[in-house]
Amino acid sequence: MSFILWMAVLGVLLLMLALTASYLRWLPVTTSAVCLAFGVAIGPMGLGLFTTDFKDTASWLERLAEAAVLFSLFSTGIKLRLGLGRSAWRAAYMLSGPVMIVSILGVCLVAHYALGLSWGVSMLLGAMLAPTDPVLASMVQVNSAQDFDRVRFGLSGEAGLNDGTAFPFVILSLLMLHHGSLDSHWLGQWALENLVWGVPVGLLIGYGMGRAIGHLMIYLRVRHADSTNSPNDFLALALIALSYFAAASVGAFGFLAVFAAGLGLRQAEVRTSNSEVPSEHLAKPISGHRDMAPEEGTVTHPNDLEDGQLAAGVMMGDILVFGNLVERSMEVLLITILGATLSAYWDWRAVGLAAALFCVIRPLSVWLLVSRRLLDGHQRALLGWFGIRGIGSIYYLCYALAHELPESVEQVCISLTLSVVALSILVHGISTQPLLEHYERRRKPV
Figure 1 (tube, rainbow, N blue to C red):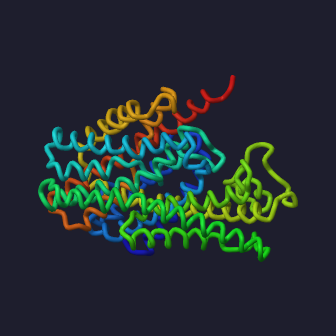
Figure 2: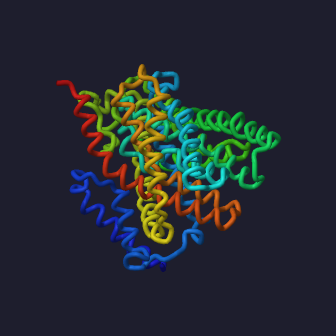
Figure 3: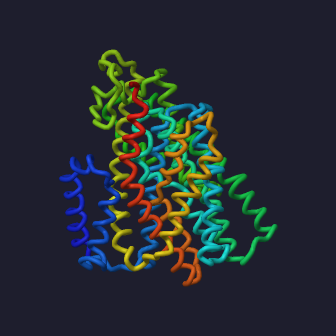
């Protein structure tokens, strides 16, 4: 497909989404599901406008998916305002740690015993499909920094953490495929480099950079009385790029660093505002961001704001709007490409694998590992179901393809991963809105 034709196709898709937004809001259909269907329509099964093989696009698709995940992780981080020691974080820790590991093992067992795949390929599929997606899961995540709902907060924290914590197991799977079996020598080195060093160092680097740069920017804008005119989108881009580079340069995980940079930036705002209300809500009369709708009674007159609150509020509001725009744009492009390439790789075995993951492995692991003292039965059931797969799995797939897998392994990984992701977009996309509406009705006082 030529660049001009791509522009036309994307223009039609974006216009269609803009014109039908009011209708989609009342239907159990997500934007991702529409993009997936549109991609199928322009692919070989439809108009035949897009016929590129997935393996031919994997190199640049990896970078595009990587950028989408980075923006989503950073945006997720700055929406989580509670301190890391608060009880609301415990569900996120359990989901991104024990639940994810059990999910990897569950997918691995199903792929090996039910589909007859080798242990290395089965482990790789588990590592690619177990983590929930920070991009497509935006509907079930926190709406703003003032949203402390346990279900939404737990899913947001999981989406931010598990893309980084899944990476060690992708690397382990590739090592298994390369060596043929587990070996105590390289297994110990893998654990040291990835679990002992890569995960905690990535978090520390990102959090430290986010918090330090956040305090510095607020201080400079207050000192120079330049709270409303500074390019806050540049700040977001800079933090994402620098935290990612800093972590990668020392062998730590950049995804975790970028998520932690968002958390650190948010904590800089918390310390500056010294208020239970996020600064972007207080500064809404100045910034005017429609996405930052505050709770009733929280809007403050601009003259009543302290300089630090104003600077922090405008900064956070601008960054959130910019991040959401980039995230949605990349989601539209990537899911459309997925739909266009799906027909060449559709694998019916993915139906059984997806059913096992969505209906047994994920729900059962959440039910058994997440304490009932944290969440009630209904909340744990929702957490078990809302395990949406998407852009993160596509990135891990492209990353694996870049490591010279055998052709038979490549075909199996591409077909099963793309098929399971497509099923997740459809099944979770259709069920998410009705289930959330039911959950919200139960939470409202009678």
